[in-house]
Image (cartoon, rainbow, N blue to C red; front, side, top):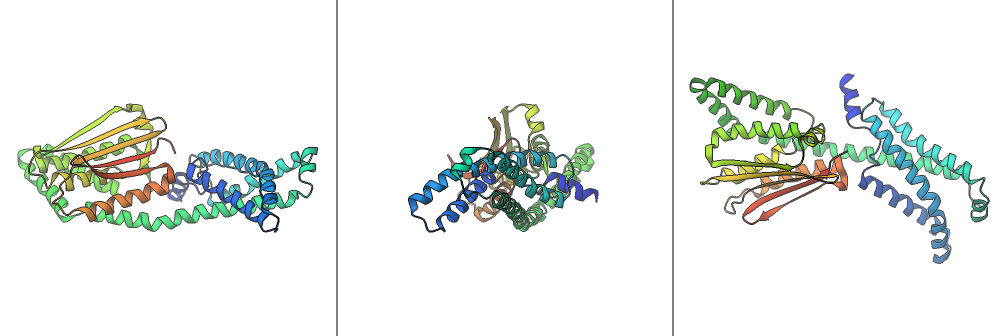
Length: 345
C-alpha cells in the first residue's frame, strides 16, 4: 500500500495543465469541437465564423480558469496522496463547477442575454463535465500507452549495463586491485553496486540533477580505472549554481546512458587520449545539457547509439511533452548530444 501511494504522489493522474503541450492540445481541441458544432448547423460560413468568435470568449474563459485550477491542484497531488478515483473526480467536477458558477454570474448580465438568447446553461455545464472527463481519460491512457516503451527502454538499459564485457572488466579491475590497493577495490565494488541499485528502480522515478551527476561520476570512476589516461572527462557547471543542481529534478538514469555511449563509442575506439565534455547550464526556466565525445566514422556504432537516444527521447516526451528537446549530430569531429527540458515540473 505504501508503495502505491508513493507512486501516485510522484505521478498524479491529473493532467499536467501547466505543460505547454497539454495546454495547447486542450485549447485547440475545444475550439475545434466548438467550430465543428457550429458548422454542422448548416449556416453560411460568415455566420459560423461570427458565432464562433462571439462564443470564443465564453469558451476561453472556462478553459483557462479550469486549466489554471487543475494546474495548481496537480501540484498538490504531487506532494499529498490522493486516490486515483478522487483525482479523476476532481478533473471532472472542478471544470464543471467553474462553468456552473460562470453561467450563474453571466445570466445576471443583460448583454449576455441579448447576445446569446438561446444559450442553455445546463448544456454548457454538462458539455464541460464530459469534455473534462474525456481529456483526463485521454491523457491517462496516453501515459499508459508509453509504459511499454518505458519498460522496453528499461530492459534495453539493463541489458546494456550488464553487457558481459562491462561487468567482466569491472569485476576484473576490482580483483586486480584487491592485493595492491584493497581500499580502491572496495570503492570500485561499491560504485558498481550503486549503479545496479539505481538501474533497478522504476525509470519513471525522478532524482535531483546533483544525484544524477554523482551517479555518472561513479560510473566514470570505474571506467577510468579500466581505460586509464586514455579517457579524460571535463565537467562545465559554471553556469548553474550548486543550489540549483540540488533542486532541479530530472528523470532517473537520464545522463548516465548518454555518458556510457560517449565512453563506449567515443573513447574505447580511440588509440589516443579522448576527452568527453559535459556542459550543464541554466537558461531562464530551462536546463541545457551538452555531452561531446570524439566521433569515429570508421566505427559501426550507429544502431546502438540511435536506440539509446530514442529511448531517452521517449522518456522526455512522456515527462515533459513538447517542452523538452533532444538533438544530436556530428559537430567538428565530435558527436554532440544536447538536452533541453524545464527546470521545474
